[in-house]
Length: 81
Picture 1 (cartoon, rainbow, N blue to C red):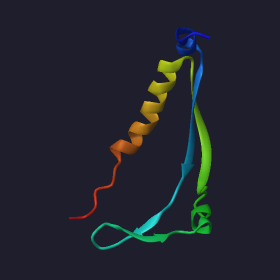
Picture 2: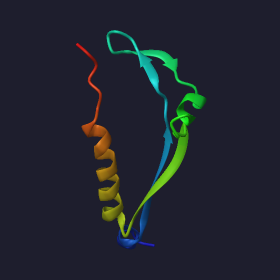
Picture 3: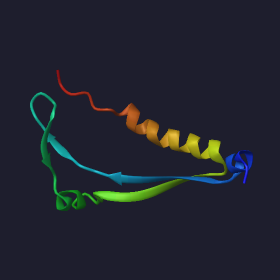
Picture 4: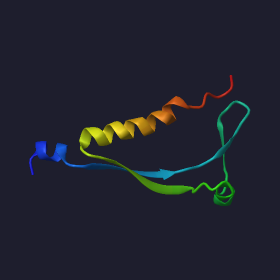
């Protein structure tokens, strides 16, 4: 299959997500203490999961992925000063 055909084929971005929730020190740095899985599950949060984003072609898939990831960039945490 040539490269042009590969670009127009449907694409899928697979995200393997691992979550850790840390307590913070007074200076905003992670303490290294991670909430256990049971604490996450109390809120209906899985500590690790896989999800996928599908697109009709390469560009569509990457644009959808970019939209999903932009939420994380917009909400980046700023430690206290």
